Length: 431
Image 1 (cartoon, helix red, strand yellow):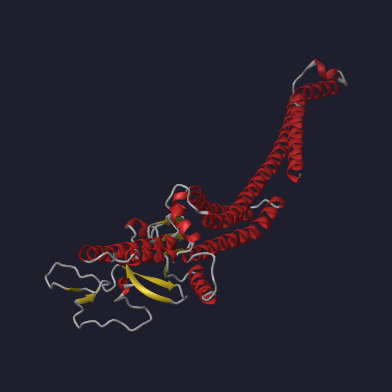
Image 2 (tube, one colour; image 1 turned 180 degrees about the horizontal axis):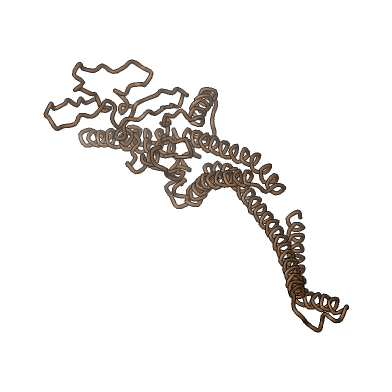
């Protein structure tokens, strides 16, 4: 951990500063002195540093101030991977396997997992605090117990667990809030209920996108065996250490023995194979099962069953949460269709009532015209017959009945069709 020498903890002893403020120690241990020339802008203290939480294998945590260059050197990561962890930018959920680290960005949990430590981005968010406390507790509790999963998978498992639990809790909370509002809207259509449904629908779409991003990332990771094989950090480190140890034995022991053979008499066979025995003992430190998984991780048939089963369990959980959101969206769509049918039925009733008022006005107007004509002061032979005015009223009524009857019939047919459509949809909706 030479990379972290010179780093200071936030809660620790403050760094000494000069009276002029022109000396600052960076994370590599070098001093930057101000030039004192005008026009050159001095950087403030801690420029580019970010607060991180380091958790080791023993469950000990420490808050550090790290810059991007130190993390890139220590974890062998490119700068684009660190940009995925920047909270100032919005990136989709990401799980990347690299040579010496796993980059995890799931909701508020943003961390870098190596074979022996977790570098967690410090935040006041509840998920980050819970991850740190729960992971330290698990490591300290199971310190002396044998674990089936390596360190990096235990860290990844907790990140997936907290992310799935957090999203599922938000989905359940949204369900408890949406269903009563939709039922109330179906019985009472008003502006207040419509505004509440509009707000909840926006919340639903945002939550669906977040869950969908986690779901797609896990599905993409499970479909790529090469990416999963890159995440076996502990096995890759053990393999590299074994190879390095073997090279060291070959370089130190075997050439020296060759020189002894060339200058002396024939040596004992035991002496000649001592280097090979040391190499065999070096490789025997790794169990056969682990050695087999190491070799298979670099071959075409990777042994990724352990990680695949871990991902499948949480993929099923996040897929269940996504199914709940889709069901909730379908319920909202069905409620909107039901409301549109009800509004259409009310609109048909209003149109029918308007037609009735128009017809009544037309009838009244006809009789008023006839009455006005016969009320004029002029001489006509029709006034000599007492029953002539009754025949005029009868003929006017028959003419109005023949003129207005078909329109009323069409209105009744349209209204009955809308009611029948409404009844058939309600039967389908309740089924």
